[in-house]
Length: 328
Image (cartoon, rainbow, N blue to C red; front, side, top):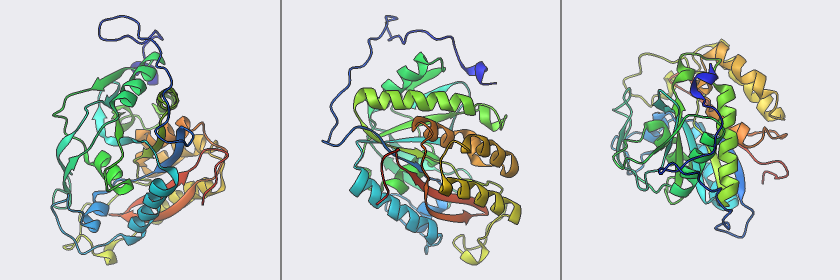
């Protein structure tokens, strides 16, 4: 199925139709070594932002889902104090594109993002900077590897809540430039398709990061098991009502997380599709596969910072470091 969304390999072309010269490596913004400095499984449930009460979000809460929110606090500290990236790159399942992979190249997206199912929890005003050079480089590399790719430059773009959610939870200061990638709609119809294509997108992402000399943190904005309640309590943040959808979903999440904690990541190539089939996992959108492929399926364990459920769905905050790095 992945071949439907690929084209024959050919040199990347600019708008004039002429062949674009390869991008020369640029010096890193810091003296530290450029490249992918971390990859994070960073789920985006709107409840987490609602529970945090940031000024950008209109609804107010009394808290809730602290285990996951505290896990994100630890991740934020690592991003800011240890990784010090030039850019955050996020792949999210709710910027759905029917054909091909789109890269946000609008310099300064601004607007109001509303979660369509939970508008009473998430009405968020965003205003952030895009690393346009890197975004264009990712699109060019992906096109050169045969993926149907589009550079999205419309300044009126309305950014989806999954992209906003993952970026806020990883960096609520919004002082790090961003590149956001769309989710090709194919995985929502064929749960076992397109993961191979996500590996190609991961390779393109890695090449572009290295060519532009960036220090990048990758954010895979997926939940795990994804069956959920259809009714919420009168008080959405009532934690008495929060638990796994059922034991089957929970046990499969634990199977996946135990494999992540053991390392290396290569066995996840087989386990992720099995987990998708067993739990309707949101990883079918390919974000986790994209991130691990970009990192070269590192021979290391992931650091599971926290796991919790939200309306019954399983969510984990996990960090992977490149091979040769060590968690502090």
